Image (cartoon, rainbow, N blue to C red; front, side, top):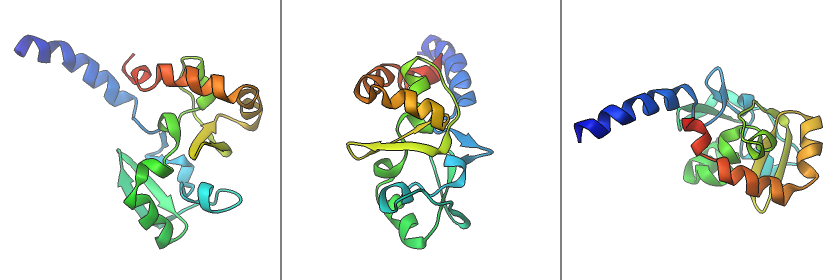
Length: 142
């Protein structure tokens, strides 16, 4: 068992350098309210005083009600692929995202790096999701 632990320690240390959720300065979705993507016509910035820590990142919310909705089922609102760019993920890479470049598909939130990349991603959404799912979450451990 000690041998296995010794082999896994370098992998675990490397994984710690790549957080499960992309978070600029520790804040998920650049401070945008994850619930607002589902509840409003456009995402809205959250407030620092209405926040929760989940999966190593701070998540900000526009309202206390949105925070409570998130806390009751964070996986329903958190972006897919850890909030990393869905298009980059489909190509086996990690990339930052723009909170204004997004799409909800089958009740799941996907973010992309920019509006230009979002247009590329939307060229074949189903295939891009399928490819990205092949890389996620193993890509964090490379």
